[in-house]
Structures are given as C-alpha cells and as structure tokens.
Image 1 (cartoon, rainbow, N blue to C red):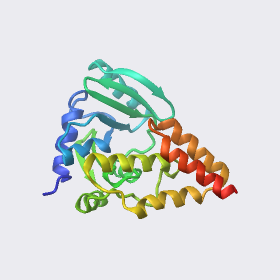
Image 2: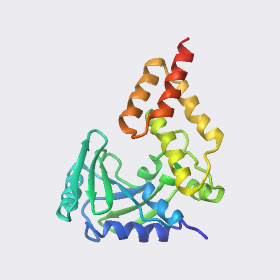
Image 3: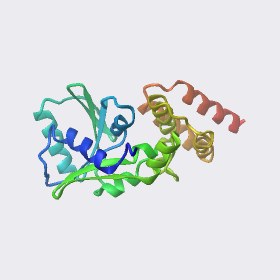
Image 4: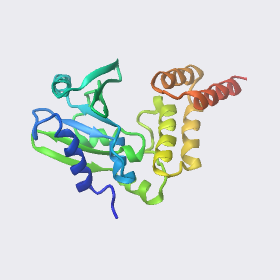
Amino acid sequence: MNELAPSKVLQLGRTWLDRFLPSRTQGRVFLIGGAYKCLLHGRPPRDLDLFCSGADFRHEVLEALRSHGARTIAENPPYQTTLSLDELTIEVAYDTTLATLEARIESTDIALSAVGCERGPQGDRALVHPLAHTSVTRREILLLTPLVNWKYSLYTLERMHRYADELGFVVPAEQEEYVWQLFLAQPPAERRAMIRRYERVSAHGGPISARAMSLCTEVSG
C-alpha cells in the first residue's frame, strides 16, 4: 500500500487549500511538509506549512486566510507568519524565492517533509520525493543530504525525533550522527550561531541545546 501516492497527496492538499483559495490562482502556493504525515498515522494535521511564489502573492494568500476567519497569532520574520484557523495552525513562510514545486521539495531537510501540493494558474499538482517512499518502507526518519538548511540542522534533529515519535518510526544512528558531525565541522562562531538559531525556533530546546553546548566546550577545551 502506497500511503504517499501522489494521488493521495494531491487529494489531501486540495482538501486544505480549497478552504481558503479558489481552484486556480494567479501565483503559486505550495503546501509542503508535515501535514501529509496524516496519510501515515490517520490523524488530522495540526499545522500547515505554506510557501508562496512572490511577496505580492504571499500578501494575497494571507488576506485570503484572514477573510476566511484566520487570525494572526505571531509574526516571526524572517521565518514565518503564524495564523490560527479553527483547529489548525498555519505558517506562511516569508521566503518567496523558490517559484516551483520541485525547488521547494528539494529545499526540505527531512525526507518525509519532501512531499507537497502546488496550486497555481494551471491548477493543482503533487510531488513526492523518492526518499520519502524509502522512509516509509524502512520506517525510518531519513535526511535529504547534503542539508540545504544546515544552519538549522539542530532544529532538524528535533523534528526528526518528533516525527519518529508520531509515526512509530526510528531515527537511524548514522542519520543523527550526520547532524552532529555537521555541527562540529563548523568554526566556533558558527556553532554558537547554530545554537542561537535553534533556541529561537524550538519550543523544546533542552537536551539538544545542552549537548550542542557541551560539544562546543569539549572542542574548545
């Protein structure tokens, strides 16, 4: 059974995009990432991650959401605007530089996030990275390497464990070690910056921050 079949991803993406957008739009909006885990565990998504192709269209998407009852609960530039709509948290990324679904999929870090649906002038389409299928088959949380977003790799590590807990998958030791080796390969100033970035975006922090700071101390010592 192919839980992440493009047809299923497309159907799910349409279900959520139909709530606040017409079937065709002048710009392109991409629903990417963790929302599609519900195809694996059967529970409704709690949050949607939206990306838009251009700043003007991003503004249109935000206005469409608000016109359908969404309220802004946080502005966190340069990362995202966070809104609440009924039972959903919706994050609309500030970054509008990637204008195709393929580019957005390739910019993700966790294979199970490399799943998405696009709505645009030609309608809707879906795309699933091959490694996402491998991840499901192995029941492992896998990375798309080299990490495009390596500066946020500590947060990626937190998300990997969160995904594993949600799905009953495992995080392979070599995948976790890849993140720590990437961290250690940076000069001291960049390692400290990575910790600060992580603490800014993480709601949990704790163990990962502690280990990162401990590794910094060991290396400097």
